[in-house]
Amino acid sequence: MSDRLFPALLRYWRGRRGLSQLDLAIEAGVSARHVSFLESGRARPSEEMVLRLLSPLRVPLRGQNEALRAAGLPPHFPEPGLEELDPNIQQALEQMMTQQEPFPLVVVGGDFTILRANHGAQALFGTFIAEPACMPKSPDLFTLLFHPQLLRPFVHDWPGLARRLLGRLQREVLQRGDDDRLQALLERIMAFPDVPLAWRHPDFSTEAPAAQTLRLTRDRIRVGFLVAITKLSAPQQVLLDELSIESCFPLDEATRETCKRLALT
Image 1: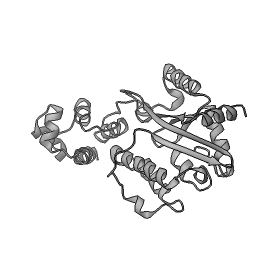
Image 2 (image 1 turned 135 degrees about the horizontal axis):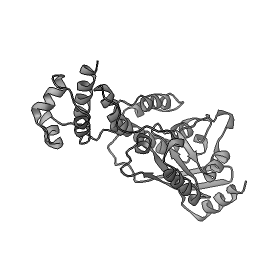
Image 3 (image 1 turned 180 degrees about the vertical axis):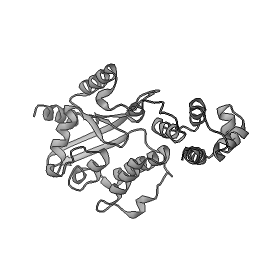
C-alpha cells in the first residue's frame, strides 16, 4: 500500500503548489530523475528525503506526518493534545489570556474548535448567545457566527463578515490540502439557513484583511472589536503548527467599559 500512497501524496502536493518535477527537484536540491522515481514508486524514500521534499511544498506538519506514514515510516512531528504541551508553552498561553482581560481571547485549534477562552470571552458569549441551550459542548468559531441561535442574530453586517470568514476557511482548506476536518466543517457551515449556495465558490478577488472587525448589538449593549490572529513561529509540533490565538481589542471607549462591566458578572 505504501508503494502507492506516498507517490500519490507527493504528486498531489506538488500539483497543488503548481510545481513541475524539475521545479521541486531544484527547490529540494535533488535530481529530477529521483523525484520521478519517487512519484512512480520505483524508489522508496527515507525520512530525510520525505521531509526534504515536503518542506519546499509548504506541507503542514500534520500532512508531513501523513506522508511519512504513507511511505511506511514513523511520524516525525509530535502530535500532543493541549494538556500535553510543554509547561512553558502552557504558561505562556495562560499569561496571554490573563493579560488580555477583560477583553476576549480564545485559543483555537486546527479545526477552529475553541480550546481555551479567557473570562472576557466567556462573558461575551454569555451576553450575546441567543439560545444558550444551542451552544455546543466544544464550539468552533464558525458555528458561533453562522448558527442562527448563537452569535449571528447580533452581528452587525452579518453577510459581509460571514463572507469574509468563509473565505478564510476556504483558504485554509486549499492550503492544508486533504484535511477531512476542515472539509466537514465547510459542509456543515454551508448547510446553515440563509447561507447562499454561491458562497460555496471561493472569491479570492479581494485580499484578505490583516484583521477582522466584529461588532455586536443586543438591546442596549453594543461592542466593537478589532480581532487579531497570532500564530506561533517555527512550531515543530502538529498542535502548535495549527494553533491560533485570536485576541479582541476594543474599537472604542464604550466597548472598553462594557467589557469591564461584563467581567464583573
